[in-house]
Length: 183
Image (cartoon, rainbow, N blue to C red; front, side, top):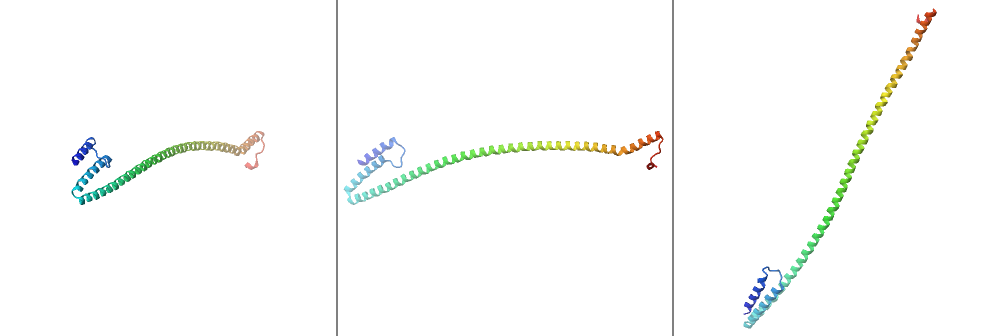
């Protein structure tokens, strides 16, 4: 009678819920009532077997209690690890964002420095071209000045010769004696 009753209760309970949870208080209570009824019936027939079943029941309850504690502890451990993982994920995301910002800043600085280098190169090239042009102009001016000095020197060096010739011409016109240095 009681076994049929437990089986019908179990079928009724399991009929609505096909999944089995790790620890279900309703199912546990049903099995405990069944086991108590079996123990009562066995104890009526044989007291020693009944006491043995009571010990088995107590051992099973202690084992189930230990398993339940272990289960709850492992759930708590899993939750702690999940929270730590989530926190680590958040920390890593923050660090990633920080590093990405730093990279962007460094890339911006590198671009600015590259632009500065290019600007300095252009400026220095322009300065060099201007200095070279100025130098070439200075060389040309010095060549012109040198040529004018050379011409002046040649003119001055040729002047006494012309003077002598012109004095000879005047002397010939005047019929004066020539310089003795020419003879």
